[in-house]
Length: 274
Image (tube, rainbow, N blue to C red; front, side):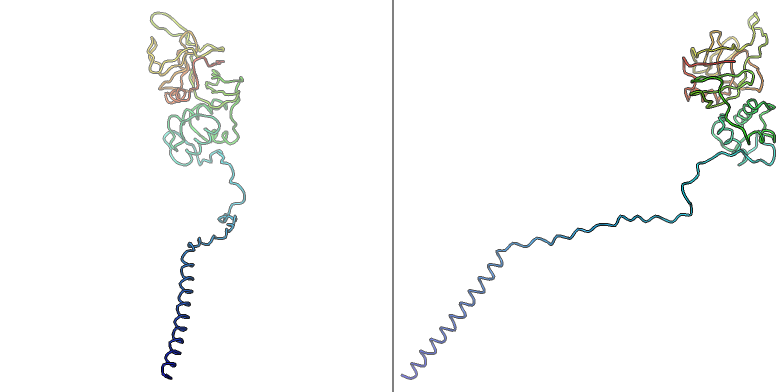
């Protein structure tokens, strides 16, 4: 009887212990399932930051903006002449070009176009016209300014006294070319006598020929005619310092190519000869 009571008490105790354990297990399982139903939280949002606007400037030894380029008159140790090469010739070319005397692109070589530009400068300045940049020419370049036009507007001005051609735009001389006009002397052609004059007056370019226009006096290279008598500005292989043509206005072949390329004498444009 005693043993039976003990067993009954043990059974009750064990049952209580089992019930407690089962209740605990259910509680833990409930917590685990609840946690599994919660979705994964979003990643944390980064706090925005402000970038510095400070710019690092590399050090410089210059104070303020760089000066504008200038073309000073060349300093020569002597006479510059055709065939010479080097920095002194290049400086001479740059100076002439800055004053408006066309010579193509400065290249440091004293070629035919430099001769033409020097000659045009000497004509404008009233100097000996030899195309050589001697001491007198170098000295004149020191204080020289761009020549002034004789008329306003857009035109080509041909000065027979000085034997130069001005390309004038808005009343200012943009470019100067060496030219050779008519000798004003009589000449004979096909049994008749003509006067080699370049008619003074106000004219217009009437027509042009892109090539060698062959006439009774020979071929004219890419002429732009401005007078009914067949007077034109045209290219020629020889453009001396004095009047030498039959009446047309000679420029170098290279200068004539440039006139065409730049459209400087379009049909209908003004030409003033004086």
